[in-house]
Length: 492
Length: 78
Image (tube, rainbow over all chains, first blue to last red; front, top):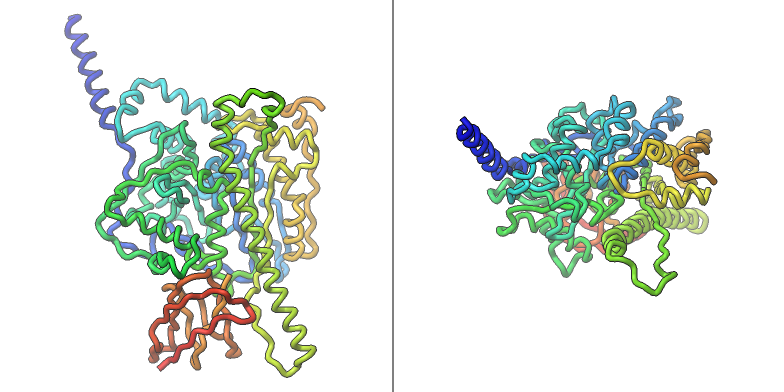
């Protein structure tokens, strides 16, 4: 009897080991033929915008639950922003959101909104923000079944995290579920990761998956979020399959962009990155956190606003006269830690150096993205003013001369929400020193939500943009609850 | 940012690197200036029905332009 039980246990262990050892990440399906009219693309999920409506683009930064709560607070406030359109009707600015581009922690917010817009505001705090995601992930490591699975070369901690997100947050939804929604009912979702082999931004859109000859429709949204929030070292890179059977040609700009003689270096780099997926020896793509290439989610929008190469080119909409007003709002949950290293001669610890090595470049890239976007909008406004000034001079000095056509008819607004702009030094310092984790106390989450609303309603760029849209619009007066600040940040 | 116009006696849609950028002229017949990023591009014009564009496509480096002096890319619809 005892021998029989031992044999049975041995058999169970062998079966577990064999099954676990065979564990494999979920393969992204193959695509036989590229079709521009199908798949998760901007032009498929959004109707062509009306030129007289604001085109609102949101960018959500990384930063774990801190970033998710901060971007959620922005969404809550946008829901309250109403303006009077030219036809006299009341419009909600949230309904004008065309695109949400997000990274890492911010991707949980954007993806949940795109999947479940009807219950987003009621459910998301309980489903994600107040949940101890980090603890949930940690305890999965103690499940013996997962030990065997993790022994497989084709299954790693990020695949386990993907399963956890899929099951507990995103309800097994795929990009096909996003595609099944009525056209224009939710914003186009751009979840950004980083392809570490080419150190380049990787977005979960069908246009990107065309390069891999893969069908995004069969990929779970949780997998895209897992890739976007795949923090280095904590998790292993997430793997995608690249298929080598031809599914169709590359977009024409890539071939043109590879010409080093006649293109700016940035365009050559983007074309080289895109073309690399069709190289014979690239059979897999390995993805890490989107923050490694852009921790603000602004690189994709910047490319879309400044080039016609982007698959969701916003510049093209300007050419089609469908972009009267562009409003970009970036929720930047970056922190700024106060260091006391320079008070002592001894060097900082290895942990502190690693923190700087990982986060320093991300912060730097984010800063550049903001400067580039803001600078571009200012340059466009200046060019437009130059044409208008020329026309005034022409009308005055050469009344018979033909006026110059001004091609820049878009009104640009760029607003960045950042803790740096909180006027109260205690609250500012408190928010700037919040940790990056997937577990924050409820009151900290609530404080972040309030801070986002406060920052939006006090953003001079946003207010100016709104007043150009509706001169009668007034920002809501928001006061952040002093008791909440005391509870989270300690007494004054 | 770069600027260009497609000059043609006829009105047609401007195709840049394979993507439609809207008509080359407005309803009054004035040339519409289009915007693009700097670099090598292919420009074509989709002529009205029954006519074909000549040349079918022009590959050109668009750079150093401004909205007052956009690059001129010339076509004929024949």
